[in-house]
Length: 207
Image (cartoon, rainbow, N blue to C red):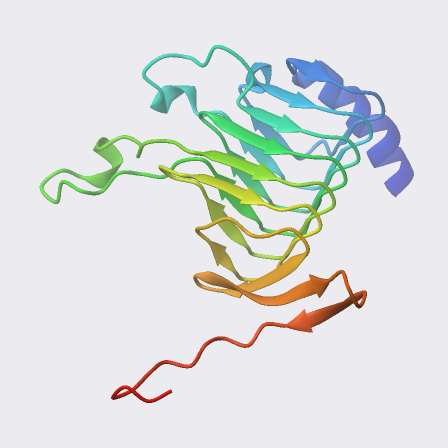
């Protein structure tokens, strides 16, 4: 039953529903996925979108339509159930990235600076660029927002579950928390992961 739903029914329905700027070979998009403005997205070979994934390029929020793709997804990317990706400028996901369930990523957010105006009427913040490097793993419920800045998640990096990422993440490191900070790095010299000990706060001039 799962084979029929994924490999036959979902492939057939998604091919009819979604007209991507480029769509690679062997792409599987579950029939429950919601994709808006697919003409401004590219999706490469053998990528898999699981149940209830939402991808959007919110044209209604933009002053003018983008001149080309704003969401680019590489090869063999696995996007877990109920993930939500929103792009108005530039989100690039490189090959072999793994997303757990319920991940939210965006290159913008809502403006809120004018307290006398409802937030829904204030439009979007300045956009940024978000790049997620090859082989990275974005854990369950993680949030990554590149509003007004460029954020890179380095190749082989791990964003732990429930983390909120507001700055770039080095390659082959593990981040956790809100805001996320580096808790482990891969030591190339010894071939193992090492914990990162945060510097102690100085109190009264003493370490």
